[in-house]
Image 1 (tube, rainbow, N blue to C red):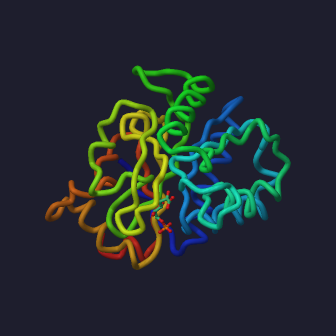
Image 2 (cartoon, rainbow, N blue to C red; image 1 turned 120 degrees about the vertical axis):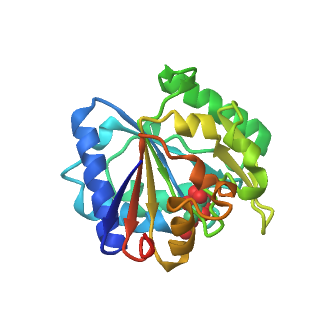
Length: 234
Ligand code: 6PG
């Protein structure tokens, strides 16, 4: 597991964007699963504004590590956020965007999405293999939509599962642990004071750090892109 610490959220996003540009230049096709929430917004705006010439977009297939079970027009939709900040600003075909159909019944959609992933990605070690999976981390140590109260999703061999947000009860479709761990590159993008304590507990293996789902992705394929605030206690 590696760590790249940058000064602020923008330079953290730039560090990841440079990694993405390099991977796209080295490969004919890159399957990337995006994270949602607020952290990636600065990255998507940066990619749209400053990397349009650096990245051959037609080599990329965009997936999601998790999606809220809402329509694509809902403000909670990770797809809607990504479309508005990135896809609408670049030249990309609909066939390259594989959104979770949040408007569908969650269990049916988890099954359908898993089948779509299997159809498009190579199978390695018995699981579909993403080239890159971007992950965020919530203040409770969740990642993708694997929350501390649903740790079984870390081991679930199904490609996707249905999660329930612990506060709102909102249903989510998420990649499960084994598929995430099977990725060639797992890239955490974690910034801000709100994540400092959990980053500290996970990196220093403090207290009950293993009760945080994010702590369970720690192989050689993992890089944490942190800003100074999130990394303050390291
Ligand atoms: C989501 C994300 C989720 C997110 C964390 C961090 O759909 O919300 O995939 O796992 O990465 O909750 O969210 P912030 O970036 O908003 O802190």
